[in-house]
Image 1 (cartoon, rainbow, N blue to C red):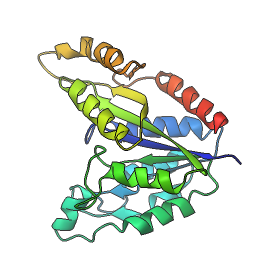
Image 2 (image 1 turned 45 degrees about the horizontal axis):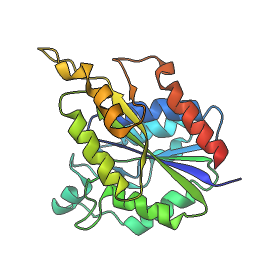
Image 3 (image 1 turned 180 degrees about the horizontal axis):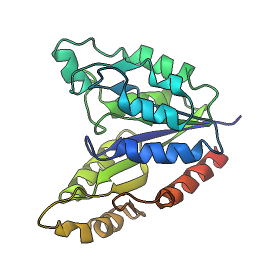
Image 4 (image 1 turned 135 degrees about the vertical axis):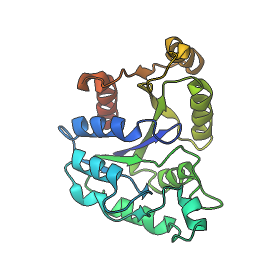
Length: 231
């Protein structure tokens, strides 16, 4: 087997649709490839981790929902630590991620919140993934998928996230504008957000409607399958 493809799925913030998009793509990729989909950091967990469970079921590996970093407060990991929860052991988490995905052709890693969510005083989620990329050099290739909520303000939020990721050599290869939340009066930016981002970033942006059909993400799936064949 060649180098595995590791996909870092992150967003411009919380509740922008990362798991919705990830679940759909993972389910399609799992039809043709061995996929391991994990969420190494999940908070707001009372019993089962909701997002991690959806991802694990999508790749038909339910055991991947358990383990990793799980805490009850609905806070970022470092904020949870300051509130009294155990801090994430980043080295042990990295070891566990690698050990539990060794047979996978695709490793899907969904972040928590945006790329700059602090895991401790010195390390963000993007820093953690960048360290994995360095550690797995020669054994894995990395790709980044960024999900943004299509709404007023998304242009700045998206460009800031892209810049932060590029500074850690985690260039965004796929950008998805998720369906907007219902609002009144209508958000006039919806007519221009995708066009502006495509012009500024010089790349195609996938724009989803509310409750999009499965095939809406087909271009993304095919792009990732091509990357798998090349790895």
